[in-house]
Length: 432
Image 1: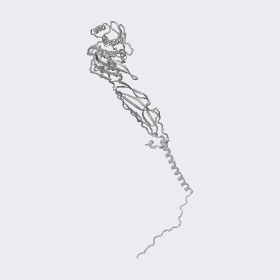
Image 2: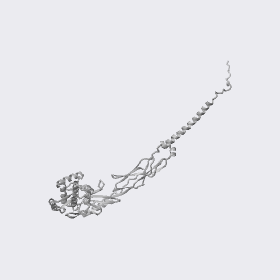
Image 3: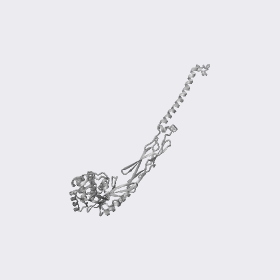
Image 4: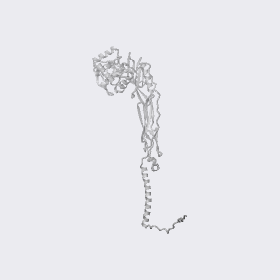
């Protein structure tokens, strides 16, 4: 038999006793904590905003890279040189290391009186003359008279000489080169080196030193068929002649007045025609008619000095016509090309805050281009954060063969600070 217990009912308690009363001091302290806690939060927020503002104001703006416009490669039409249908030839231009072109067999052949250019250069190597200088006096003797008669006996070209006459070095060179006097080439060689043999040794050493490996001289005048050279070497010799201030002036003279001898005339009858201003004719049975020539031609605003040679012509009328045709065709093969003009745009800067500035050329630039030599260009520019107007920040570099032309690039307008408003609103751009 079981018994049951009544479930417990709710417990009743007496009235709730109030907690201890806070004193005024405690209430004040609590309120002060609340107030100062709030102020601390506000201050922290204000300080954070201030620090962020200062940081944003002081932070460097992001660098902006230029969007570049690379010019396309370009080329002019290929030159068509007018070569003679005989002999051999070559042509070059002062300032260019490579020949413009060649024609015919380029092996060494007799060069006749063009040999006298070697003689003149080797004599000037031992006895240099400054521009406009007459040089020392040379007194001619009976030995020079004997040389004169030997030249006549060889049926070589000559100019009169008398024992006791005196010429300056320049006058003697003029007499050797203008009328192509063989006897003066011998007399000058003996005067400068003591003997023809000593001269020939010096000439051989000089040719080796200059790298003219396809040139050999057996005499001072070129009457010997053993005095030989190649078209390429002769162009180099011609370059040396036009570079020498005394020799280049002499070979450009149509006439000269020489004491005792009188007026002498240049055998190069092309002088003054088609820009031709030198250098030396040559004629023998073995060599044929030859002309080592120089010519100044105008291309745009520039002057080009051409140096070339034609060997093995039937006569000088034929050679002269061929030289003029070759010079004209070489002139037409040069082009003065405008690479750029000041203000041409090669790129631009666009900043994250919306400013724009073009990248423009500071100057005009032109180039003298031979034939179809390609022209390439590469544009480079540095990234910028801020920039003044006309600040140089890049370069366009043109390459034409072995020549490089650099043109600076500058900003067309200023790139300025975006201001505090943009800085505050673009933390990602500033602090990345």
